Length: 340
Image 1 (cartoon, rainbow, N blue to C red):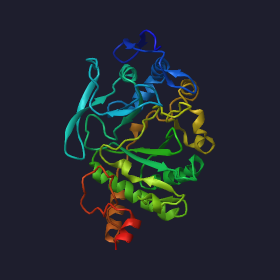
Image 2 (tube, rainbow, N blue to C red):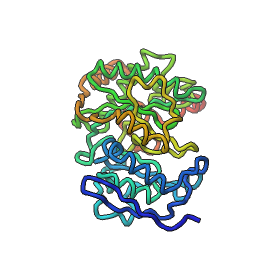
Image 3 (cartoon, rainbow, N blue to C red):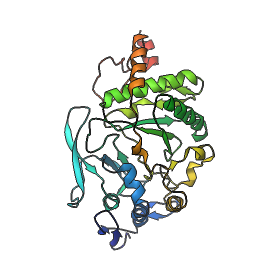
Image 4 (cartoon, rainbow, N blue to C red):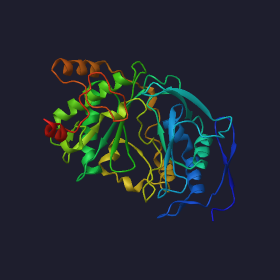
């Protein structure tokens, strides 16, 4: 039995808001017994840092009406019945279609999204003020079978050093699973395709420096056990779990921002819905002030052109994207060889 509704009072920039939580005792994470109400209370506890990281951006909601073991779906359009103080912004998708997406301006909006059974929040790399031009460069270091977080750490450290070489200030967080996410604030002066090309140039240079550990190979059959530098996360409408967002894994982890000197000894499994509020109180928000020093992509776009001149062209796009100019064939290399 899910239980009667509860009401949470959520402080925010416009004063307190009362947010109704239906079915508050519904268990979302069976193993630790975390309920819908506890999820909402978590978002209140980390609310300021959560909005600092994810606010004023189009956001997609990954919703789990029956908990992490049940069916899930993505909401890109704002769910029906949104309060009048929850706004949206119209964005353009890769297909050219335009639709509104939710924008989180205050902790109460995140709590309301939890009321709508949202577990994972996926913010865009661009702000609601300029949805076509990202103000973050993002890289997902994705461990392959046989590797994990420990193998992604040296890659993240090397990536930070390389980003510093091109004038970018890197910030790091756990993915909430096995990977590592590295972000850098940038001036919103290039559209998504240009930012993607900058990420590819950065990824290729990092791969040259660590060829045994890293790969930009899109096809899994070519990666082996190397960490994949997922350049496609830089595309329009491609997102990753936001900072402080919960993840739908058994122990209720969250994607946790870290100080760089914490990274090598960090254990991602320790950062959960139940431990994160105390961590924030004890050590603060490592991503506070991220937007204060945005960099520019000038050098990376020069590297992209250099690689083009050297015969390195476009890389594959995700399968749901329209065919893009200069893109290689969307077929696995082994299948292409078999077809010859």
